[in-house]
Image 1 (cartoon, rainbow, N blue to C red):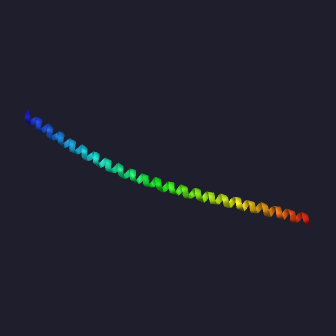
Image 2: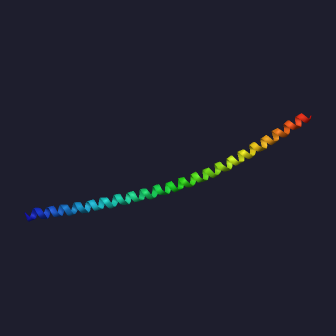
Image 3: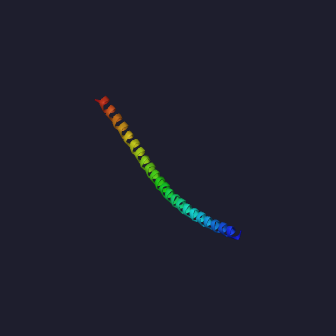
Length: 83
């Protein structure tokens, strides 16, 4: 009976070590994935912010060009009426 108990304890201890090793490996892998995902997320947020700034600049430039076009069109219309 003591041999069976000893074998059980040996197997149980080995299983415990194997489980702890598996858990440690999984935890390390998940931590690396989280770190990588966090970095990708930060990079993406920075890119989105940069694109938004670019878009705002382009919208301002478009409004400026539209204003200039309307001014030139108005000036040309007045000039043609005066002729």
